[in-house]
Image 1 (cartoon, rainbow, N blue to C red):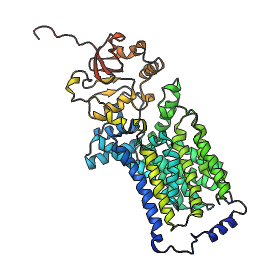
Image 2 (image 1 turned 90 degrees about the vertical axis):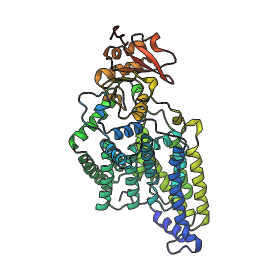
Image 3 (image 1 turned 120 degrees about the vertical axis):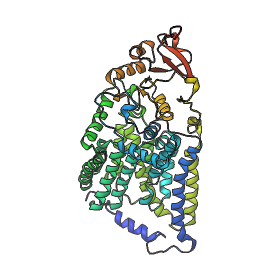
Image 4 (image 1 turned 180 degrees about the vertical axis):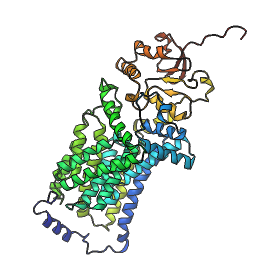
Length: 513
C-alpha cells in the first residue's frame, strides 16, 4: 500500500504507546481530566483574539476587501463600477459578493463594520481549521508562531479579508482528512467532504483550475486511490460551485479566460498586482523543512515518510511555482507546510507530554502569549497605518465640482485610490478606469496604464487618457506639487495628501447668463 508505514514503525508505535503515560487504558483523574478541554479552549481563544486585537489598532485591509464591501453595499455589478472590456462576462467572486450582500442586508452595518466582519470571520475559520484534527491543539499554536508569527507578510495575508481564505480552509481540511484516514481508501463521506470543500471554494473564490495542484501533490505522494478520488471531487465540486452562480458554463470559462488574460496581457511582470509577481526567494520554508527532518530523526517520530505525504509535495509545488507567481506559495504552499509541521509536532507532543499534565496547560498558555505578541505587535505601524488614511468623499464641500459628474470616469493609475474611494463612496455615480485587476480594462486603457507604470508617470504616458476625457471625467495623480507644470491641459486642485484632481478647463459662462 502506498501509505504504509516503514518497516519497524508499527513496533515502535506499540512501544511508545505502552511506555507513554497517555496510554488509552489510563484515564485522567482529578483536575487533570479537564486539561485537554482547557488546552483546546486556550488555543481557540488565542486564535480568535488575534484579529480582534489587530482591528483594535484601526486596521483595515488594504485592497479587495474594501471593494468587496462597497460592492455589497451598493448592490451594483462591476460594469457599473469599473470601465471594463466589452467581453467581460461574469463576476468571478459572485458567491462571495452575494454572501456579503446578504450580511449587509441582515445587519444594515456600515462599510467599516462589513469589512471587519469578513476579515475576522475568515481569519478565525482558517485559524481554527486544524484544531478538530489534532490531538494536541498546542501543536497548531507552535505552527502559527513559526509561520504567521515570524513572517509578517504571511500574517498580513491572513488579515486580507478575501475569499481566498476559504480556498485555504478547503485545502487544509483535505490534507488533514487524508492524514486521519491513513492508508484506507477514501469512503463516500470523505469524497462528500472533499467535493463540498471544493464546491464552496469555487463558488466564492472562482479559481477552480488551481485545484489541479492538490491532485498533482497526491499523485506525487503515490496516493493513487486518493488522487483519483480527489480528481473526481475536483470535477464534481467545480460543477456544483459553478451551478450556484446560475451561469455555470460561463462562470467556469470566464474564470479560466480571466486567469489567462491576467498572465498573458501584461508585457512586464512589474505591471502585475503584487501577489502575481514572482517571489524573490524565501529560505524559511527550507529551514523549516530541514528542522522537520531533524526532529523526525532525533525524536524517532512514527510518521510516514515525507515523500508519502501530499502536504509535503503541495508545499514543494507551491514553493517552486512561487518563482512564477508568489500566490502559488502564500495561498497553496505555505498552508500545506503548516499542515506538515502541525502533524509532526502533534506526534511529538503526544509522546513527550501526558494528556492530563498541568505542564501541558502551562505550555499552551505560554505559546498563546507568544503567538499574541509575535502577530499583534504594531512594528512599523503595520496594523495602525490604515487608521490614518484619508479619503475623498462626495459630501466634502472642499471637493465640490472636482469629483466626476454623474456618468463620469476617474482616470487613475493608482489601484489604492480605487479601493479607498470606492470604499467610502459605494453609491457614487461615477466609474473607475483601474480596479482590482488591470487585465479587465479595455485594451486601449490597459496599454495606457502599462505605459504609465513602465515609464514612471511621464507626462507623455498620460496623453491618451487626457485626449479621451470629457467634462464629467476627472484625472487623479499623486504628486508633491501642482501637476500643471507638466500636464497643463488640465486644471488641477489639491485634494488630500499627495492626491491632485484634474479636469478639463471650465469655460466661463457668457455675461448676463
